[in-house]
Length: 116
Length: 113
Image (cartoon, rainbow over all chains, first blue to last red):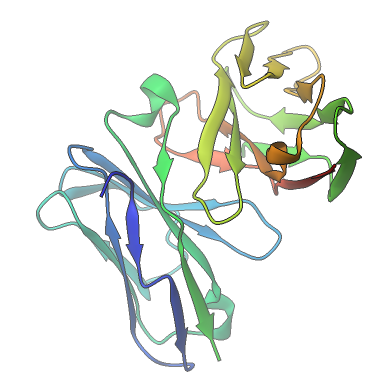
């Protein structure tokens, strides 16, 4: 497709379960970002990839969160032992070149995670 | 650390009204400033930006001026339309080159016909 695609759009899980959220960026975009948006808040940075490597993972809240981008395109955000506080919308964004050059990120519609 | 504060919403206006959404920031150095918009059922998209003091960003009738002396980047539009109903986010990028945006909490705008 033309835009950033995220799946699933909605995920309901139970506390303690493992969750994977997938992001398919715009074709050719080398930079990929994950943000988390809690209810009533703005997006908060989690991690970004330049190519296959995680260039900055300083926003990941703890070691239950992990993200990969093995072939430099699709990325998966993985959350282990989910907690109720993990409930949020997880946003993926991509850009053709690094953020600092244009400031323009292309966002997907997000994956809404609910942990019961 | 860097932060962005937006006026609280929701904001409800009638069509053709004048709009201002306030945004102030705290940052070291000289960040770039942005307004992103999220229309219903869509992902966030860049509305406008300004990269240095006194720059004015503009798009779709919206404007915002980078005011370093007041650390502000208020969003304005002279005559809003129903189609402007959305959530608006002010954001800044770290001037030290970190590849991340810091967002405000968002302001929901509803325009009534």
